[in-house]
Image 1 (cartoon, rainbow, N blue to C red):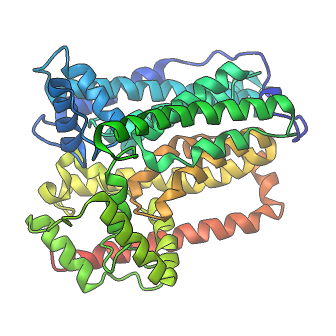
Image 2: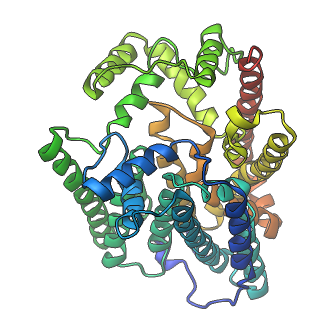
Length: 460
């Protein structure tokens, strides 16, 4: 083991361990099997909006400013040379992107294995294989890969950034490339903006000139990519923004009735929340007819007038990111079509949340172990999690928003399985009290979410 003060790139052994490729083949098979089953007529979440925006961009060259642009660009990339391409055909690109995620998880697992378990090549190979299998069979990831939404492209960019930043002896070119990817990531999911600052900061160990220069390059390249798009939107539409839906999300999370507010102190759904769900599923829900500027002003005025409620909602939003997952129901047509208590829905929910429970709670302990064994890698991964949830506390939060760091938790959970003795060393320290508090908060969040979910459906 090396001392903690050294940079990430100084800690990784140069040798390589051969690992099996069959987990990648397993991932391909599972995703293609799901692709065959999911019909073309079934759109998930925001997929219809992204598909329409991308199709219009390919035909007219007009960018729909409501949606963050990169997902629409990917769809337009296919639709421009092949105008008749169906959404089902475009989803094959998303599956290919998710196979890139599988390979990136495999690469990151190799980095961790070499840094922490490198003295025993067979053990390192087992860790890499098991971590790759973990992501390959992870149902939420399989579900995201079936629909042309922003989750899978965003995840691939995050993982590629981590691969670059944890590369042995990563230099300025690697940090510049990572910065460019962070820029395009923000154009995919603006809520991940904090990563532009937190990730380069996590790579600093001794504040050396070279480290500071690389971190600055990372930030400047990423900011330039985002700034160029925002400037273009200002010139074309008079709006200095990445997308308009950021103001919309800020508004719906900060007004008198927040439909998805998880009140950890009184988790039972209110009558207003129940009525909101009824109107949503009946198609009677009326959306606010306000401009993005007006939505933002209304939200900020409400926050200023209700700081205590805002703080309470922020705690609930944090818990909601780690709550049980329901987005896998999109594989069956969503809750509106399949119902939450149908046999297929229950099977999907049970499978996904059994996996998620293991990944979440074992992953937290495994990441604490990694932080102890290799501080550089641990800080980069923890900064990714922190940067992914930061802006969720301000606007809206959903359980699927953990997709950004689910693979990181899988890597942590696998470390706990392969190296339990190292984890026990962490648990014997004062860290165990912090871990107990974190796991207690997560369990509290799960309990509150279940009460909210059941009570909000009582009159459905």
